[in-house]
Length: 86
Image (cartoon, rainbow, N blue to C red; front, side, top):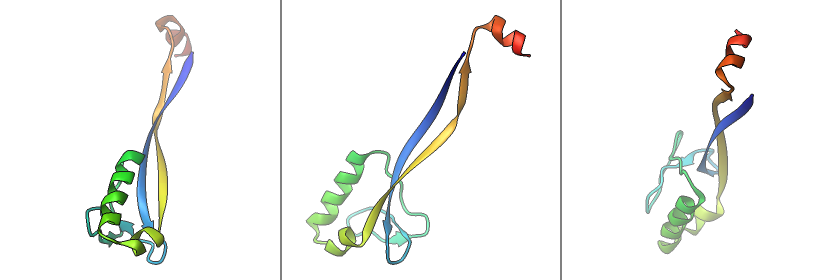
């Protein structure tokens, strides 16, 4: 029997002064929910866009938060073994 966990990773940018999250975009607002990015590549792209518009405070006052959401556990076994477990 093998156990597998499916993990989804996503990232948020949190303003350390307000506790709110970036909504993304060129001139990002901060909201209670904010935006989630799926990869570090997406975060880097967003930060490059923000830096090109000279939002130094945005970069200096924020922290990157990585979340891992465990979707569940899958058990793989042969059918005979499964019947024995029932």
